[in-house]
Image 1 (spheres, rainbow, N blue to C red):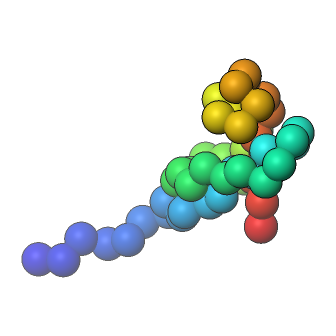
Image 2 (image 1 turned 90 degrees about the vertical axis):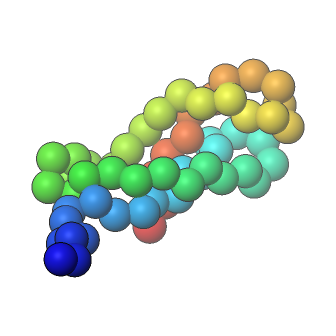
Length: 55
C-alpha cells in the first residue's frame, strides 16, 4: 500500500552573509508555520552563520 505524502515539505535555506550558498532540508508544515532559521556551517566563509528559509 502506498504511503501518504504527509505534511513534510522540502525547503531551501540561504545564507544571510557572504556569497550565495544554500542547504536543502525538510520541515513539517503543520508544526512549523513560521520561516525556519538555523545556524549552520558556511564552507566559503569557514564559520557558522545564520541560514533562513527562502520561498
